[in-house]
Amino acid sequence: MFFKVRDLNSKTSVDYIIVGQGLAGSCLALQLIKENKRILVIDQFDEHSATQAAAGLFNPVTGRVMSKTWKADTLFPYLHDFYREAEALTGSKFFHSMPLYRPFLSIEEQNEWMGKSAQQDFKDYIASVDTHEAHAGLVKNPFGGLTLRQAGWLDTAAFSQAVRQYILKHELLLNDTFDEDLLVLKDEEIQYRNYSAHKIIFCQGVKALTGKLFSWIPIRPLKGETLTIQTDVKIDTLYNRGVFVVPETGKVGATYQPNDQQPTVTEAARNELKSKLDELVCFPYRIITQSWGIRPTTPDRRPILGPHPEHPNAIFFNGLGTKGVSLAPYFSKVLAAWIENKGAINKEVDIERYKHYNYGGNIPR
Ligand SMILES: Cc1cc2nc3c(=O)[nH]c(=O)nc-3n(C[C@H](O)[C@H](O)[C@H](O)COP(=O)(O)OP(=O)(O)OC[C@H]3O[C@@H](n4cnc5c(N)ncnc54)[C@H](O)[C@@H]3O)c2cc1C
Image 1: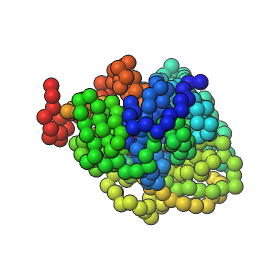
Image 2: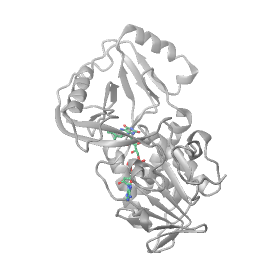
Image 3: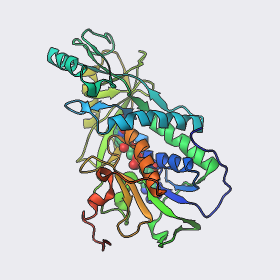
Image 4: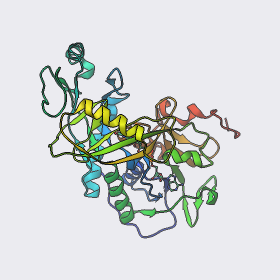
């Protein structure tokens, strides 16, 4: 098996402490367990954390102009292996690899994708370009549509719950709010309450902004809302145009509300999602619930990894933004390798690039 199972009795000395157990903390925990490290995870469950709120889609071709996502050739093959192995380790089901269908809006768009499908760059991701109504009766697709492979969805809440159960059984978990005032950072080790460790890794999502050590990092909160619908129609494909519809969970989303920090759902978001859903699907549905969460995005849309400029034992893993499901597996591997002195952090994601960003401390050079 990929991950090593090891039983731990309660100990106060661990290799690493991880603060936060969303997608970032969960993936990093699995990587360190794989390295046979002893870990303590401290997480206060929050039903509105990005990981709990997420729909969990992973899609290698995205954006307004529909291009291959950043590092898709590296991230996508790896995420499939990673989540499947995590399922085997935890004995749970949360990973759903399935095609994603995007209806065309015009003949021009259909022609454009006929051309792109011949390009080497897209060959691993395009399953078919349909010129007929391939999903008639389910979605509005008079000009056909594009079917992508290597896509799917992760049940992010089930994934983090499965990892939590695994940590509870084999490692150490504190279901508590981490209190930064109780943290003692020394050169050779760090201490927190009655625990000591070599390093502490902060995977707090947007709550990084409320702490002291890393609040200077420009994490930009981006609120999103989703609807959950019920329908009698059987869906076995992800539909995505304006909004996405996830089979099984019935999640529809998501909005992007950069100027809204209200800790509540809004009527405007409900109307926006409903109107976009009506443009996409033909089947009848009922809206069951609406929920919200806040994504931890960054100015350059890249994750942020690495040590605090003055406290090298305090490490940051954040900025997964809108694509946590595809970014977290690979970049947790990069970070775990770096922590263990087995690899480097890629420049594009290195915390170094933000070290002068509103940082008031004396940075050693
Ligand atoms: C509506 C919505 C839809 C989304 N859809 C998708 C999608 O389809 N596909 C995709 O890839 N991504 C999606 N995302 C983005 C994705 O959810 C995020 O990229 C990802 O979940 C971020 O994970 P994280 O671990 O960095 O942060 P979080 O999920 O916020 O996790 C941080 C954890 O740390 C805990 N924590 C923080 N501070 C403390 C403390 N002091 N003490 C104890 N615990 C603490 C929090 O309670 C939380 O449990 C979506 C996000 C939203 C909001």
